[in-house]
Length: 416
Ligand code: AMP
Ligand code: GLY
Image: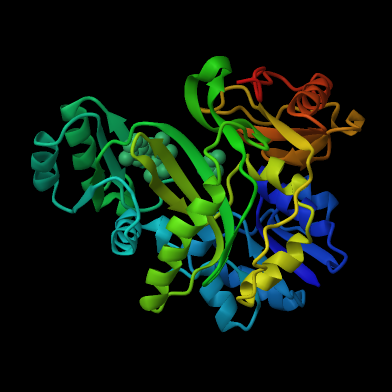
C-alpha cells in the first residue's frame, strides 16, 4: 500500500516509523514530513498540511491507498471530507466530527447529552454577559476560547478581573474567530491524565497509557511546553482507566454523534481530571498525544496499518491489543529559547552515533550542512528496556551524545 502521512512532528515520525514496520506498506509519503520521516520515504516540506487541495492532488498523482492524519488542524480544515469526495481512503474524523475538538461548545453539548461527567459550563458571545456570569461564579475561573487556538485558548486564574478581561479580549477577536464564543467552566481539581484510542464510528479500542511532562524544568517548574518527555507504561493510574473511559465516555459519545448523523472515525484523545468525585472529561482531541505517541507506538505489537484499515471499515478488533512488556522513556531535546522564542539554525551533532535509542525528529531542518535545529522541540530520544529505569538509562546515555547550541532537556523524566 502507498500511505500518505500528514504532519511533521515527533508524533508523526513515530507514526511513520510504526507504519513502516508493516509488511503491507510499499511507499510512505509525508506532508510536510521532517528529516526523520525523509529517511522513511518522500517528504514535501513546502506543502502546508491544511492545504486540502494540494494534498488531494498529490494523493492522486502518487496513487495513494491510504491517508493517515497526525495533527488536528487538517481535520478541522476538512481534509477528510475532501479526500472522501475524491475517493481516497483516509483515516480521521470529517470536519463535522472533528468539532469534538475544534469547538468546545459542540463537545460540551455532546457530553451533556451523552451524560458524561465533565465540568459544568456556560457559553457566551456577549462580553458583558460573560463578565456578569463570572462575577457570581466561584474562583478559580476557567475561561476557554471555543475554537482551535494552538493550545493557548484556555485561562485558569484566581483573579476575577483577569478572567473577565480575558473573556472580553477573546470575544473582541484576540484569537480570531476561534475566540468569538467563549466557554466559562467550573474548575476541576485533581490529577490530569489522558487516554488514547482508535474509533471506528461505533467501537473504540484503547492504547496503553503514557505519562507526559508539560513543564520546561525539572520538578515541574518553569513554563508550560508542548511536552518535555514521556514514558509508558504509566504507573499510578486508577485500575481499568482505559476500559472505563471507553465504556463511560467514548462509546456514549460515539452513540450520540451517530444519532446526529455524524460518524466519528479516527484517533480520540480523552483528557481527564481525576477529581474526588471520579474522573471528569476536560477535553477531547482528535489526535494522539505528543510526546506520548513516541513511547506508546514502539510498544505496540500489532500491525498499525492493519489496525487503521480496520477502523476505517468499522471493523476494529474487540479483543484488547497486544503490547510489549518493555518500557519506553522519551526525553525531548529542545532549542534554546523554547518555549517563548526558540532559536533555530544550530547544527545538531551526534545523531548518527546513536545506536540503541530511537530518535524521532520534531523541529529539525535538513540543510547542505546537515541537520540543524528548526523548531522548539528538536528531537525525541526514546530508550527501551525491560524496566522504566533501564529504558531511562538508554535514553539519557544517548542524549549526552547529541549536541547543539543551547540544548535544553529535563533530567528527571520517568523518575517522578
Ligand atoms: P483544554 O484546551 O480544554 O485542554 O485546556 C487546557 C488545559 O487547561 C488542560 O489541560 C487543563 O490543565 C486546564 N483546564 C482546562 N479546563 C479545566 C477545568 N475545567 N478545570 C481545571 N483545569 C482545566
Ligand atoms: N501531550 C499532550 C498533548 O498532546 O496535547
